[in-house]
Image (cartoon, rainbow, N blue to C red; front, side):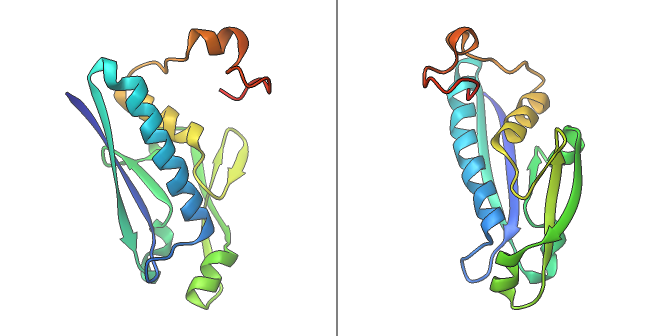
Length: 146
C-alpha cells in the first residue's frame, strides 16, 4: 500500500494552541478522513501526525508538510504573517503568526482545499470528484460546495 505522510507543526502551550492553528488542525483531520475514503480503492493510505512547537518556534507554527515537503513548495502559496491575538493571549506578548496567500486570498488557517490539492499533487494523481457532484452539486441545494 502506498502512503502519504502529512506532518502538521503548531504551537502548543500547556496543551493549548491558537485559534488559527486549531482551525488548521480541524481542516487537516477532516481532509485526511476524506482523502482516505477517496484513495482507499487505489491502494493509498494517508496518515498524519503533529509536531508541537514551543514559543521559540513561532515562525514554523501552522505549517503542513507532505512527505517532508512544505505545502508552499507544492502549491502556488505565498507565506506571510500578521498579528495573532490568540497567540498573544497564550504567550502574553505581541505575536505575529504565519498566514498563507492561496488563490489570491489570505488565510490564517490552511484551508481544506489547499490540503486536498497538495495531497493529490504529491501523489501525482488527478483529484477525483463524484460524477453526481459535478452534474448537480452535492445535493445540499447550496451549489458549489463540493
